[in-house]
Amino acid sequence: MVTLLRKLIPERDLRLWYAGLVVIAANAGGAWSPIGDVTTTMLWIGGQVSTAGLITNLVIPSIVCFVVPFAVASFLPAFQGELNLEKQEAGEHQKLLSSPMLFLGL
Image (cartoon, rainbow, N blue to C red; front, side, top):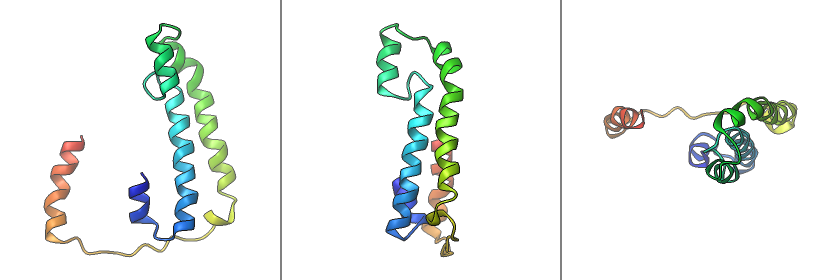
């Protein structure tokens, strides 16, 4: 995600703000899944928690842990401006690689 942010946001300081939000989102998203976090994976392998139990008990708190920081961040000055993205012409080499990479990813 940081590599993608480097392509999308050229300013380092603004990119750090977005990278912080990516970390928050990744941690909140991984908490409710048995394979999303190292601690929950160890508990799941040890039989201490079940997949259904994790999902039913942690999906709502994980969403809250994602939404609250993003709502607060939306009022910060760093997220009040506009992103000026440079439009680039896709070269022939880039066009050739796009479709295979999409299918490989899927």
